[in-house]
Image (cartoon, rainbow over all chains, first blue to last red):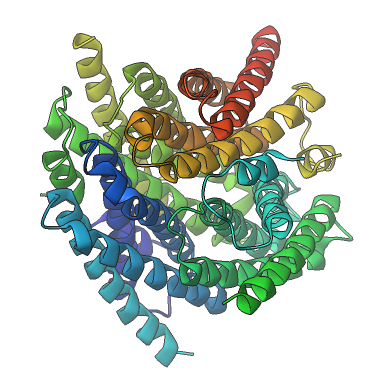
Length: 139
Length: 139
Length: 139
Length: 139
């Protein structure tokens, strides 16, 4: 059981979203944010021949890292929750994850860190979409 | 001229959005993020009688600080830009700014820091909405 | 194997620090940052009687969340590394982790989320101290 | 008067540090964080010939942006303050600002955004050093 799951289990406020789904989304977003930060840096460390072709990928990594980080923080907060704020932020995360996953996919055969980061983005996008569907149903 | 404006002026990539509007949005978002962080902390420093009534306001401050921060970062990046990612994040920011402005408005008569923070949120929301309209037109 | 470990394994730059220790520190810092964000929010959701006694704990949680997050990002970057920047940031993290662990310890019997967060802070402090010793030896 | 100064003026907790110096440091750190985010991105947008020589500069920009951001947040919080946490984080910021200023200085003649960012780093380093001296005296 991760810290995210344990913190939800010990939270004093009633949590109306599926706890398992919520903890999974928080964990996926924090791991993916780290993978994106690391992928941007790994791209920066590539050869002078490869680096120019990776500029857009680095930019998408940086956006995705920041957006995933912020989305995990918003989801971690349950007190006085406004689902509309969370939903809008989750939709922003889906956009960034899709874009970053697509950028990394273009480089996965040449750079293994892009393959790992693509997987993190795709997995997280799916988990966030599932959470969004759940939130949608409980509106 | 702020650093945000000077950095846009010296950026090597062609910027298709209105530079003045973009720099204003970046500056408003970074200032508002700071105001929200400070308002959350000022609320925490209020009396034991007042604090429980401020819990939702603190939570909204924290979300708004994180979301404004990330949105300013995304807007500051112009290389390999995907307007769809920026637009989704700006829409998330509008939601958070509206919510936080409303929460602070409830406490502005009792706590002057909430009045200042409400103004930061309202101003930033307006500037972000203007930028969103501009981005919309240039699609 | 976590994403942090996989990203280090696929990084193009030679990594002179112990990879296992580095990945463990990055993972501990990101998990602890999340636990601190969640503990601040769980404290905010406590009763009107309990909340005023938790103000300092919330403040320490917020500092620790931000500092752990930034430290994990700095550690995740290996290209063009300046160990002095990383070391100074790690020392800042140790301070924040110690302080937040101490604050949560005061409330662990009354609030289980503080017990969980204290454990996250103590574990992370130990792992970061180990990494700092390792970096020290390799200077 | 900036929002940072107004938030300090309306804060309910007694502030023992020089308010003017504190507000200046918070404003400098938030502006510098933005400049560093923008400089990293402007470097990424440079030509394929120039980009490989800017990899270390980008990395230092990213570290400095994150560290300045977190330091501004810690300084913005005055409730239940532990000066030791703030001081350690300020020392981390000085290291990052010095390093990033030095990296940008190497490229200021070729890239004007590096000249602007160097100035932001140097100014902020000086202001943070002044604040650190002040905090030192009041220990």
